[in-house]
Length: 297
Image (cartoon, rainbow, N blue to C red; front, side, top):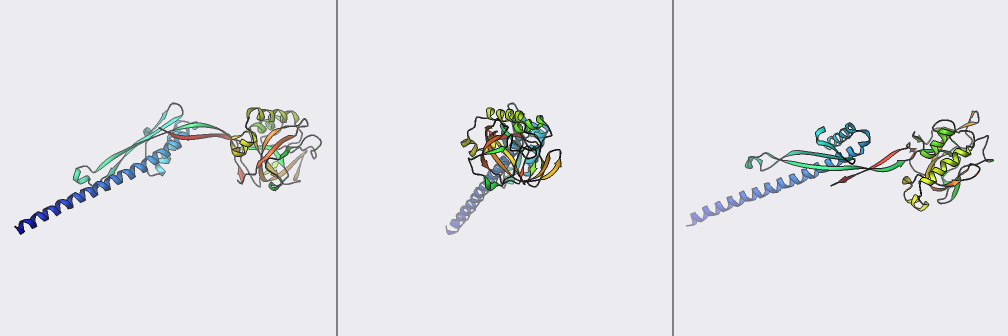
């Protein structure tokens, strides 16, 4: 009888050990499937967001950006895995096999994990570049909320200069456009800039009027989100004096940048604005469209 009991105990231990191994294998497989699905879903989300951000550049750019982001996260996808949907939306969808610990026992070496991510492009407005005004001051000379002359008016210019810069070309037309839209080029501390002689009262008043009318943002709102406010203009802080270039023009060097909330103009061509801040970035990108992207269900 004792020999029979020993045999039953061995059988029980063997069955228990087998069950324990199976449970361990199932737990390991479930963990791997969960981790891999999380990784591939994160990669799909990133690919969809990258593709949506490239929508303004066309379908080829959308697929290229989505594939690049997927590749950077360790997954090679095809163009067919990236679909453009109506309303500025991008869908990224693919599947990947995952090896299973219990695969040999189940006569199935792996299991496919499928994911899908969708993102849409949302218009976020504009990022504005440098405006054609220069102040020979330091950043410590300003106080938040205090009004300053961003551009001087008649009777205050020196040798015909009224703090106007020739950023996008010479003449009243490029100047007015640059006041409203900002410069397209990138400017950095240490870059030379050249003044544009003349007061340009008419173009100045018209351009500032356009800015004020198109943006009803209050100064308090502009302080919280200066990049979202068209009336917050960035101007150059330059070295005093400068180098005479002839023809009434002077070359200055950009020392820093300052932002002002434009409040209006004077009859003499002056521009008035409340000081907002001095950005810490050493360079100021040119005017460009700004887009936001978000994941959707």
